[in-house]
Length: 231
Length: 408
Image (tube, rainbow over all chains, first blue to last red; front, side, top):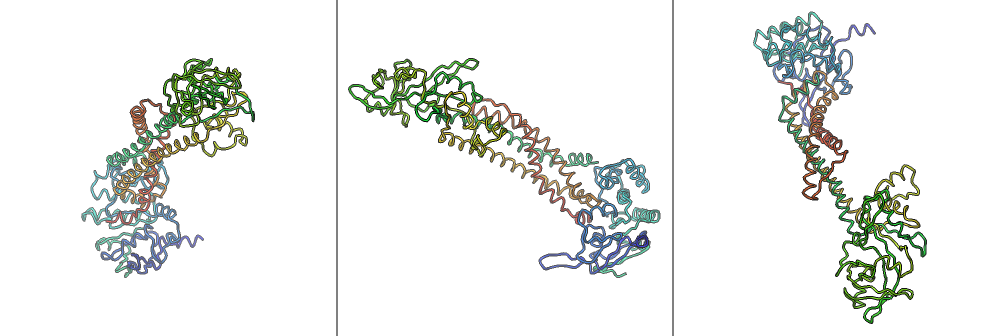
């Protein structure tokens, strides 16, 4: 049992396919993707537009169900899970960083980070608040905890989004072009931050990026072309 | 945090919140007003319908012969349902021979009260008699005012060729009594073959002092339902109590029967049923209008919420993405809608109460007192509108796909 646990990958996709369409007219956007990610990996997912990167990320993030194949999250088959269980698993195991950060404007940075904690526990504890403050400090926003998103720069907002993604200490963080909306300096800063967190905590990262310069700095690069993994 | 989410929603979308609030308020106000005046309308209509005539007949319980006692009549105004009894009148009948101007005819002489001042110790004074319970009778002339005066049915008057001012001699079992005819009555019914004289005179003529053949009672009652039609003899104690304390024509009849020695009370079904059916239809119409008003409000709430949901879809999608389950999403939006509906319910009640007052004053020229149940009813109506209006938007919210909303 313990041996099995040690070697269980964070993520294991086998022959994952995804089709869209109805009334007999379908388009297959993922053609049998097989991919394994171990704990602590820092992986870039690259590929041209329309290659299926976002679809793959959504399937890994349990936001979409594949049409075929299997997806094991920490060894658990997700294809047969009811929606409520998928939601719970997503809340506990996966952090998301979006290109447009999607912070709630009326909340302070601290409240945005505390949101997943509150949703997980159903209430807020002093320990959760401490963790949220610690995370904001870790991403370099100790002096901005009570700022609302409108008062923060794009890079700072993305840092809040990263802290929010790490709030429940998920083993896997999915980042969909997290630097795509930032200038080069800010993008470098964000990428460096993600890498440092990966080194410190062993959190697994899968980062969709169009930037080959950043992709080269990842420990692994998965390239997707026309819905197939080519490298 | 939940409070912050709700506060955020209220502050960020004041127009949407106001629209929802107004929709719920209107629904609650209309429901309050309609339900508030429906009781009043039923009561007023029931009073109007009493002009149809009496709806309870009291007669001696003996199979043949037998009389009721006139001295028991005041007790009718002391029974449990005394405030529902709008009038009654006794009758003492006999076949008689009438003669006037050389013409002789057989008919019925009927002793009764026309408009008797009734004093009952401990109760308000009242006027009882035919004038009260048969307001549709048309009298050409006037009503009798002393013991030797009478009114005569139009058919009998025609056969005797008598008009107001003439005399009619009435003979019963060899005893005679002369009456001065002061009015000719047209009723459209069997009463037109009768001569109506003061009860005391007819009792004397028939040598039946203090006796009464039957009593017609006019009472305000509620429409009969399945429970009201049950045989009281088969009821449990609790059922009997409930039946007795509901103003069914049967329970009021039973109530009156209990104070009239040797009597048997029977509902006059053709009257009671017609009234019941009419009141039932009236209540149904009011209820239907209330439901329609609430339905319209729920539709307006639904439309406003749909617009609000579209605006908030990124927030919902984000919450779903970071682990909010269906219950948590529902709690936020239902909580928000319920808060608005509580406020809408209170304001709707206050507005509806005023509206009911205005309608009552305009239509019935009377004021109404809001029943205690109206406030909780207004709140429940508002909550129902909010819940009904939330169903479709909430379903849409739960179906939001974070992928599509958060992308790009």
